[in-house]
Image (cartoon, rainbow, N blue to C red):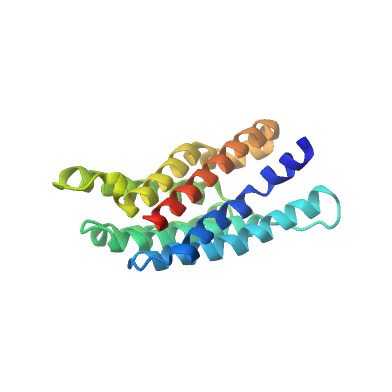
Length: 215
C-alpha cells in the first residue's frame, strides 16, 4: 500500500492535471480567459508525462536521458500562457504585459547564452524570474480586486480561484526555484523533501483551477 501511495505521489504532477481537465470537460466554461488556462493544462500534461517518464526510466536504470530541458520549456510555457490569462482579467495587466514578456525573453537569452550556457540544465535563475513575474501579476490582480467595489464575494469569482492557486504555488516554491541548482549539488536529500512540497502545491493549484471551471 505504501509503495502504491509512493508511486502515486511520484506522478502527482501528471494526474493532478486530470482533475482540472475533467472539470473543464464536464462544464466547458465559456469565459475568454479559459483558452490560455486550458492550453496550459494540455501542454503541461504532455511535458510532465515526458519529465516523469524519463525520471522513472533513469531511476530504475531502464535508460539514461536528461529531462531538464523539459522543465525549462514548462517554465516558458507557464509564464506566457498565464501572462495571456492575466491579459483578460484586469485593466492594469496590459501595462505589465508591455515589459514583462520582453524582460523574461531578454533575461533568458542572457542566462542561456552567457551565464548558464546550457539550455539542457534546469536554470534556477529563470525559474525564480518566472515566479517573481507571475507573483507580480497575482499581487496586481488582488490589489485591483480590493480597490473595486465588489457586490459579489471574491470566492464566487472563477478568476479568484485561478490566481489564488497560482499565488500559493509560486509563493511557496520561489525559494525552492531560486536555490534549486545549489541544492541539486550540495544537498540532494533536502531537495527531495522540498520537491514533495512543490508537488503538493502543484496539486493544490490544479484543484483550484478545477474549482474555477466549476464556477
